Length: 309
Image (cartoon, rainbow, N blue to C red):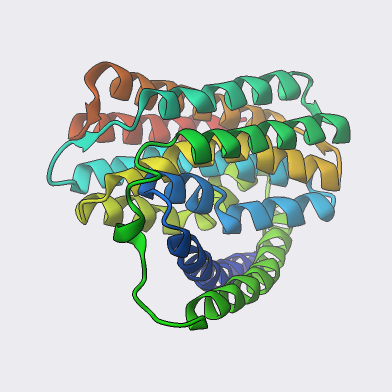
């Protein structure tokens, strides 16, 4: 048990170090192009390199329930604990993004639901999910508001070609470190499943999903506190689209996935949380502390229910 916990903590620490380097590098490259804050959040932070890496490694090592649990648990944690905390710490209501950007991830959620309805994701289904996510990328790049008007706000004023080269190096180096951290996390999680009576899907959703997503708390709180809520909401809805289609699809391409009951429950929780947050944004055009407290309460309910499965 001690070794399993140690591997989980060490893997999380290595994963964060690699992710920070990768995100900094990729953000530098993205800023050179002058993309909008929402697009940056949806496509750069939304992929969540730590969570994606852990899911791929879990699938490759023959731990499909850990992979799917982690995938859906990441979404649950982001939409409840991370975004809920950001709303509670916000000094003012968080404005809603464009309605199209709120509704678009619903298509990916529905596609994910159809694919996992038999609790199995084949490689063919995985390929279709990846293609669907690529359509989301195209939509965000072409449609996301402000994309053509925020270049000067995101530009890094460093002369010459040092920035792109340095950013590319950070990105590649960070991805290498992420692979090592993800491997340690999955090995630790597998040991925890073997040494306890916990379901693999629950360990993936409630433990792996949280460990790989703790940085998402800062990615939600800091942009909102610093007056760039588009970055936070882009990360929020972009992660939902990425993990219910693209990341799930890539993990299935590596190895077909079987879901257990805890993984399916995590997907259901993610769908409920998205419905709540999207409804608040669409109806009220903003969200604040009441919504934050509500989704945090839903997170606690999910933890209690899923622990019994």
